Length: 458
Picture 1 (tube, helix red, strand yellow):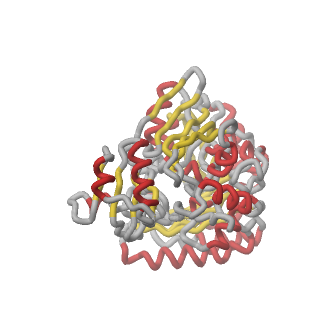
Picture 2 (cartoon, one colour; picture 1 turned 180 degrees about the vertical axis):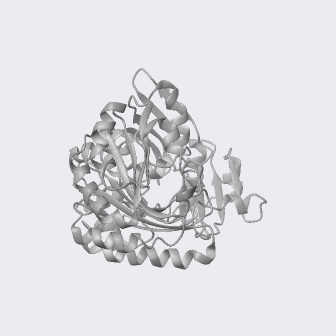
Picture 3 (spheres, rainbow, N blue to C red; picture 1 turned 90 degrees about the vertical axis):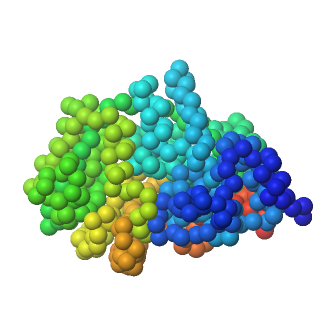
């Protein structure tokens, strides 16, 4: 094995190389989840693709455990590692909108707020997530669910091409025409196959949306969730909206008398006209006695960034997830039992609808497998105080244990902690074998393994 010295890396590197002795190290090593406290041996903060190639070659040559960090938002902290190399893409922020072809090319250090900023002046958007500080790379590679899923599909369903640095240090493009096997794999298979340095997305004519919450008393949760389950199966695809158990935060947008109250609610986002939206949502918004009900026009970037102040970096996070093809009355009863015990103000449970356009892609057409799912469930324990880490983790695990028997089995990989190979394989199902074969082709020694790991076929 030919090793590369630090001095050799430094001579060919235009970004920052940050070691534990450097003043920038303590801030540079932090990731979004304050529960993750790892100390890499070296952080290579890349300025461009040439830096990425140099960093990968350095990691491979020195057999270093290597993590890839885009936006750094991964809940399990898989953008860092102990005593290894972190290839940090956060300074690679280039974006180019092609309004004529309705596409955008995005470098891997961008977060979705960067993309919204670039595309909104053209009256367009790419299907993304729910929080604008989420990294483009991580969200996309796991599949990408968000407000626009029912109308336009997953983020990967709008992905046209990627640029990739492979473990061999080579640079390739993957699309439906070029390296199609690799393109199939990265659409849901995570960062297992290389460092994706840029993404090309299809854009859609989205400018203003109809957005807002409907909150009900916790006592009405069973009826609301039951009605929502039936409603979302038949709702027009321009209607989006996720169900939540939550504690109303003391934010100016909410009436003061609701602050800190536990409620159930639906956060609506519709791409239909105001009239279409009013008509479509009427069955749900007139249900029971809502505590708060307001849906009105909002620019899409405002919707995407609305919850950013609540979920900033450094909070304690623990989450678990599952896919659901159906939600039985017994499952709803267990949701109410555990959802009503939300332990802290920022903890929550969300049910994201993933039907509509996302279901028109076959389960074997991309690595993302659960195309028949109706909901992605995520149970999220969040709090600023490390003293509450055990409390939020226990609530999350107990809740997940109660609902898992009713699930379809696997999870949306972006909402997983480090849960072991059985869970990874359950999340890819029959696609796992094909992924393992592609992994063998592009990363036979499993260099890219700090992720929800797909092991190369022996």
